[in-house]
Each structure stands twice: as C-alpha cells, then as structure tokens.
Image (cartoon, rainbow, N blue to C red; front, side, top):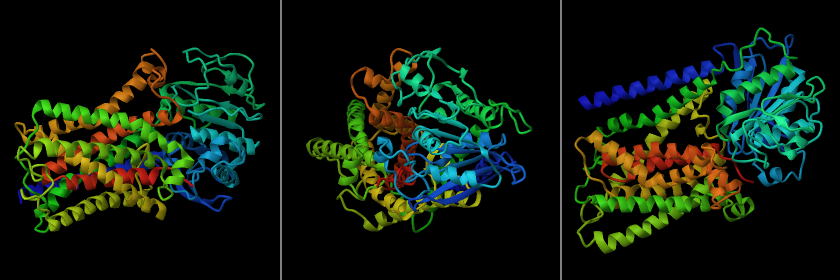
Length: 609
C-alpha cells in the first residue's frame, strides 16, 4: 500500500507538471493575452481541406489593419514547426497564418511531391496559395502589405505563391533554394552554414557567397556579402542573404534566423517603422514555448512508470509482473561482441533502406496501403534489422544456448521452463499496453482540444489523429515497429544479450539502459559523426559524400533525421528497459514503445498519393 500511494503521488505530480507546462505554452504563444490564436479550416481548389492557425494581434481590426504573413513549413513537417516565426511576428504587430500544406498535418489531400519537385506545374503550391488568398481576404489584414515565409519545401512553395501573386511585398525562403523566378519582391534568402540541401555549389565562407548561379537568381550582378542588404525596398528589388551558423533542420529555431525575418518584415511591410508593437528582434520568447512543450512531452511518457506501477498492484493486472528470470547472463566478452555486431548491422542497413522512401513512384506502387512516406523508410529498416537479428539469434540459440540449458523462459519469452505461453497473462499484458497508450493519447487530446497545444519539441510527436487514414496508418506501422522491438529490443537485448545485475536496482537500470543504447544506437551515432563532425570542424563538407560513401538528398534527409531519431530512440530504450525489469518479460515494453513510434510517425508524416 505504501508503494501504491507513492506511485499515485508521482502520477498526480506528473499531471500537475503537464498541466502547468501546457498552460505556459498556451500563454507564451499568445504573448500573455496580446495575441489571439485560432484554428482555421479552408478548402483548397482541389476540394481538399487545409488546416491552419491564425495568429492575430488583439488590436488588429477592420479599422486598424495590420500586415499579413503566410508561414509555410517544410517537407514531412507541419504548421507548428514554424511556431518560432508565427509567435515572434505576431507579437510585433503582424497577422500570421501558418498552414498545413496538402498531405501534411491536419490538412487533407496528399503530398504530390513528384509533381511539386519537378516544377512541371508552376501553379501547384500544395495548397499554399489557398492560404495566401484567405489571409489577403481577412478584414483586419492590410492587403497592401503581405509577406510570405517558408522553410525548406515551404521556401519553394513561398516562391511559387509569390509568383502567382505579384501583390506580395516581401519573401523569405529559409533553408531552401532559389528558383530564379523573375519579379519576386524583396527577397530575404536565409542560408544555413551547414545546409544539407540546396547548396547550389556556392562557396561557403564567413564573408561571401561567390556563386554566380545564386547571384543571378537574386537578380544581382556582383558578389554578395553575407548579412548585407542590396537593392531598393520601395522598388521591390531589395535582397539580403543572412548567414546562420546552424544546420538545415534547426534553422527554424535559431535566434538569428528568426530575428532576420522579423526585421525584414518590419523594413518591407511597415516601411521600416518601429511602432508601438516593436520589440528588438533578438528578444525572443518562442524558445520557452518549445521548452514547455518538451517538458509536457517527456513527462507524459515518464508518467507511464507510476501509472504502470499502480495498475500492477491491482488483482487483475498483478500477474503481468512476473519475476525476472535469472538462469542466463551473457558473459562480458560475449555481450560486447553481440552488441557491437548488432549496432553495426543496424547502421549498415539504415541508409540504404530508409532512403528508398524517396523513390516515390516505386514505393507507392509497391506499398499502396502505406501512405506515410517517412514511415515507409523506417518500415524497411525495421523488418530488415529484425530479420537479420532473428536469424543470428536462431543460430546462437540452436548452437550454443540450447546446449547450455538456456530456455525461452530465461530469455523473457515463455512463462515457465517448458516454453509454455500463458495466453491469459499475455492478453492482460496487451490490454495494459493499450491502457498506457490511451493514457498518453487522452492527455495529449485534452491539451490539444482545450488549449490547442501539442506535446512535442518543434517537430510532430504527440498529436491527435486528424483523419481515418492517419488512424489506420497507426495500426499498419505498428506491425513493423512491434516486430522490431520484440526481436531487436526483446529477444536480443534481454535474451541473447542479457546483462548482469549490479549493486542496486537503480544502478542496474541505468547501466542496462546505457549499454542498450550502445547496442542499438552507437552505429547510427557514428553515421551522424562521420556526416557532421568534419563539417562542424571545418575540415570538409558533409562527411559521407566527402568520403564517397553516399550522397543525394535521400541520404541527406535521413542523416539529418538521425538528429531527432537518436535522442528519441534513446529515451524509448529507457522505457523499454524499465518495462522489462518491471515485468520480467519482453512484451509490455515492446507494445508500449512500438505504439509510441508508430504514433509519432503516422500523425506527422506526409501522406503519399
């Protein structure tokens, strides 16, 4: 009873932290009452729904119109990834509309990436033009002062929309490429120092862009100094190229990139005036919102620990907590061999398989029911890694473990030494895993319904399913994820590579977790190091292409996403380790963790045609 009360208190504490973090996030994005934030629903010319968020300064009215800015996200992302710009612009007296383009986030339709990327249809903006026309029609928006900003794919969309609407007055593609469309007005082209895409071959130095292609696309005829403004704002010919010491993925949350955008919009849409709304560009609050969203995200997952502990004290779920088997422990030497082989296999398979997602036509034809494009890359990797790991496990078990008397019970699979499965307990385990997922989904759902907040760090993680397709995708992608975490995260980590106990349970949990991270993630971390470290140190460009090992946008996309996947999987491995130690079996952890990764990828990824 003492432990139950302790866990109930911890659960309540988690709820308090989640509520407070959500309220703070809500307050910050509204600049503590000075900005009104409302969801909007539009209909694209194709008939698909477009979801957006409108940030309106409270004092913006039909009698007091304010400049409007369309804010566009990047590929495989959503409108909330652009919160940094929306928040900082709105609190400085701009009306900002951030939308989910077609096939992304809460919008309908599909992301016709081949059509968009090929440039074959110069009027196809993935729904972005619908957002621009809506913004322009609002009675409190000054239709004579409109700007467009966008990250990566959104930066390309911003130029397409600008070309379709010559009444725009300012444009800011960041982490993107220039299309060279003539007549675009007042371009702020924000460049990341460590830009994985859209490099266009220009020289990357601290002082100058020397590439003639870039100069021509900006409509200039001389070398461009970083952070220097050229041309005439009143004539629409102003050009500026800020140089931001950041990578493609993180440029949207960089102080300098946001400050440059904010000041450019003041110069171009407010005639340079520093009105009563003006705040110095570098004085930013969006980072606090990101922090509180992250706290809510992490604490929601951590709340599974006291929740599970409480449920395991009930008579119904008590059998799920089995004693941990002690009959087999891998020797220190064997463990390091097994772990190293596993991490190398995962790394070797990762880029060749995940990058196949960018063969859009082939993937869509082969897997027509699998609509989330980034998830398809992970699916191939999950299945391949599980197949190789399962084969090696089978060979090991038949040749060594079985002869030594190691049973499936010792490996956390069966419920007694006769390899018997207790289907009643397994059923309760699955139910408990489902309750854990519903707990997290309910908390997120309430926060999103009541306050419009998602539990995330910039990129989509926890959010409500916006359509039946996304809900169905969750179940489809749960299968490969569950396979991976049962085999690689179950049979292997807690079976073949079972570790010894240490002096205390807490120390054992920590050591197991750290070593499990090595066994699963060290190879992926090495890919990241090879790709980025030489670049960050100024030795060469991106490491893999420089070594002739890999190249192309598909490879770049996945090395970039390792910056998100590695910390995400490290946290999930902690939960996986805790669940195994708490239940003595591999099942509950695999169910909970696989449901999380399937949730994260199915609610935020781009939907294919």
